Image (cartoon, rainbow, N blue to C red; front, top):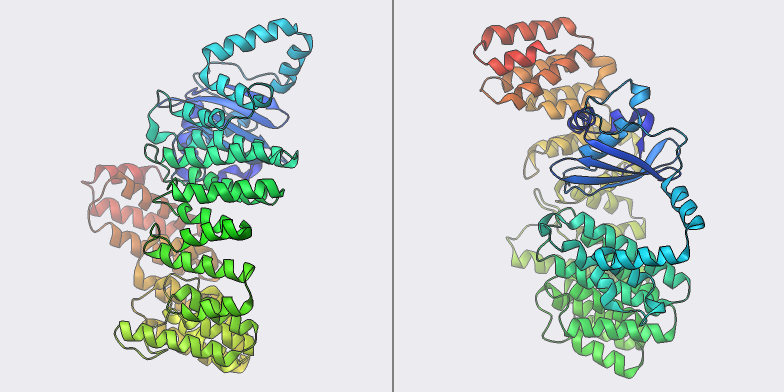
Length: 563
């Protein structure tokens, strides 16, 4: 969640979302904005449905926010932006054209103050009657009330906590309910943390397991592509570890829950089916628990990747519960599993047994090459998945030559890895006097030896070394408007005219084929950037050229008129 400075919010929020949020505000879509407590606001915004926006302001910035809408294509939705414009309307000189409610007075009490005042003055019997009526009429309120005060009734009940999550789905379109369910899960887990802090870990265990199980069950009908529900399942499992560490009784309860959940396949089909075994591996004690855990780690329920994870967890368990000799023998027996081999290499490096570490790594590379098309280590177009291990060994040995060799290979040929650390290693280990020639060779190899031409890969070197002429040449070869914009700030000071020329060439190329209004709006936006670069004359010439060349494209003519 990004921090949104109120004084410069328009600079950190996407332009399209800003425009939509402003339109929502001006149309009077905000029915009310209330201050729940100091700095915490809640607003009702009318959209496709009525949505609730909540935000917290601290230090003239929005530090927390959420909206009940299903939008998940970016960090901020238009409903939140509409509320920001509402809060800033006087300062910005804005006015909603169809306001449904007046702006609340500046000194109006917060909701928390208002509720506190009512509770202080209200008769206890009237409050009791109100609560009883709400429990009878409002299922969500009833579930929350019974769960909050479970210890005063029949005692803490896992089903009561599960009901709070289930009630979110009642009578709604389930697929869009990830955020509302996550909001309830968040509140329940906050309550679990308080129970742990107050030495009531048993109650926390009921809450945590209810949250994890209900959210996993909800995956069958709720779209969690945003990852909100998955996040709170992970949080629940973190709390399971905290509960297990609280006392011996709860340790046993957590281990039993994890093993039973695996046996009953509560989380089957998800990574959490293995996660429960990881937690049990950390906390299992005694012959009975360890025997039961070993049976699951080596049992038929694990398949594919799970088998290797089971072997790895068995290794961890042996290291914790058996002698070093037993653990070492198990590791040696299972070196054909990559995770065990990597663990063995790491252990050898920690023991400074570099000969063994190198031997284990080279054996893995030989096996890898035997399975695939044979390729020599470090050859063009190839970085073994084990080259990182060789680099780690070289770093542990302070072997500058091999550090450069392996870091260069990984920088050039690794796939789906962050190349920044490899570049930093190269720069810190290649002598300064050799660095210019080294980077020349690096650029040449990126262009000629990598598997595919990667503009960002090449630009990383060019930008780090401030070779702006080469960057301009690279951008001219791609004619990609977004890429030009990405590097514009780096070039503006000394090469504003050249950047403007790049934009012009790219826009001309983009306009050679007809497109929709979005495409023409994009062209207009980049023409505005040309003007901001101080190249108004070039922009006006381009506008005239496009008007003359494409008069039949009415949408383009309209967008050019707006510049």
